[in-house]
Length: 180
Image (tube, rainbow, N blue to C red; front, side):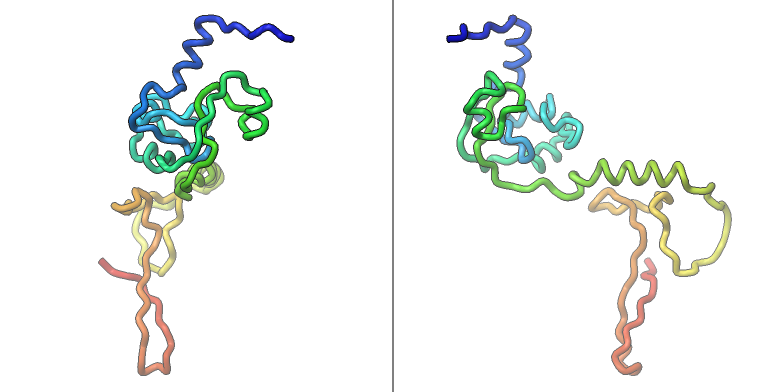
């Protein structure tokens, strides 16, 4: 029989950091299922999804990417044990994990890194923008032209149109730019 593994005090403190520090306001990350308090997610972010979800210091993201609707709790101390392999947690860091989580991460958060990469790539390969006058020709503003921002989404308004049915033209639909 193998003797129990002893951890150095600094390793224990690093592990303890990501275990829930209370029993109120517990939430589980929808992506990796780690359970911490809402305050811990806000202060530390999700230790497993840090690069993808960016929850640290962003309460809106904490609420959007975590849930209070989870079932079961499993404490992972030694990754790779039978219990962690059986529950799909064998590659996770020590912490408390939910066995089942209910909820979905909003698409705009999941696709954000892809959109940022696309924008950077587009900026690097696009020719210099033309400055000056010109008239409205019905074209849509490209994504690299960061025009007016949508107040509700915080993203650029690329183009808007209104559909006006013409009853005299036999049911045809005309699409014209919306004027504000």
